[in-house]
Length: 109
Length: 112
Image 1 (cartoon, rainbow over the protein chains, first blue to last red):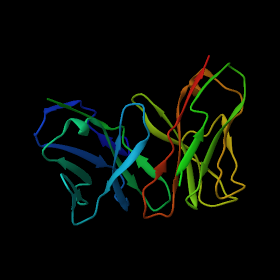
Image 2: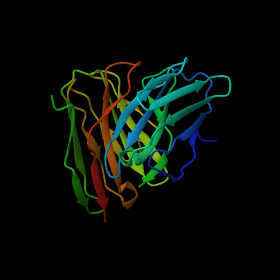
Image 3: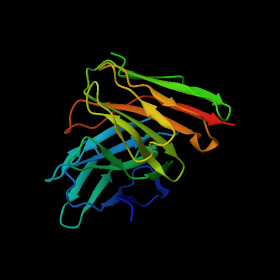
Image 4: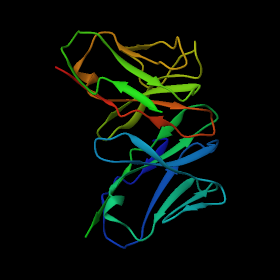
C-alpha cells in the first residue's frame, strides 16, 4: 500500500463549480499535512498547510480526519486558473515529506 | 531573493557519462532535498540533508551521490548515467520540520 494515496483523476469541472479531493495516508504517526499545487512542467508550490481543526484560505478549504487518516481539499467557485495537479503531502516525525502522486483538475469554460 | 536555483534546466547525457546537478538556496534553510519525478510515480526522495555537513539516503539513492559542504549548496552527482535516470529532478529546501518545502524549477534530464 502506498504511504499517501490519491485519486489521479482527472476531475473535469465547469467554471464556478465546487470540487473536492480526498487523500488517505497509511502512517498514523503522521504529524504535518500539506496540499501542494503543480502546474504542467513546473515545480510543486505550497498551496496550504492542513491543520487539525480545518482551515480555509479564500476559496480553498482543507480538512484533516486523523481517526480515518484522510485529508481533503475543497475548492469553491472554480476558476480556469485552478487547473493543475494537486499533491497531498504528509510528514512523519522527520524532516522528510511524503508526496502523493497527485490529482489532476481541469476546469473548463 | 532567488529562493532555490537549479542548473541546468535541461540536459542530455549519454549512458555512462557523469554529471552534477547544481542546487543553491539563499534563504538560509537548514534542510535540503533532492527528488525525482516520473510519470505515475510521484515525487521520490533521492537524498536529503538536515544541515550543513550531513546527508542521508532517501527512497531511491542508487546511482547518485551528494555532499553538503555549505548551507547554500546541495549538488547531486550522477555517477554513471543510465536510461533509467531519465527524469525530472527537483531540489527543495525547508527551514524546519513545521514548514513545507520551497522547490527549485527543476532539471529535465534525458539519458540516451
